[in-house]
Length: 95
Image 1 (cartoon, helix red, strand yellow):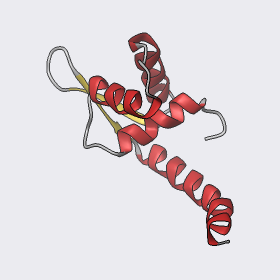
Image 2 (cartoon, rainbow, N blue to C red):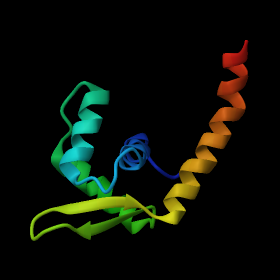
Image 3 (cartoon, rainbow, N blue to C red):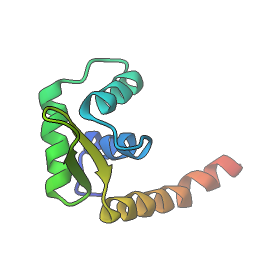
Image 4 (cartoon, rainbow, N blue to C red):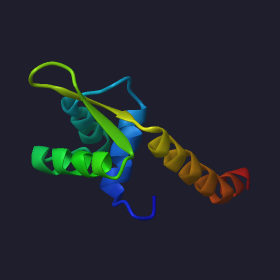
């Protein structure tokens, strides 16, 4: 995930935490974490980037709403990132 900006990585985690969330649900999660408003243009531009990179999938829910899910590639990226983080964080937490 070295090629993603932090916001994009956070989007992947927000998608992971929900079953097929729409953009509004993802925005709500991030606003709760960030404690500030997330610009919709920034949100949807970065979601489209994740789709273009093959990390997320966008499907139409109805005529107006899209839902998002991780692709297998996206899941592998998150898993690899967590394993990398655990190498360092788990050691620190055990002290």
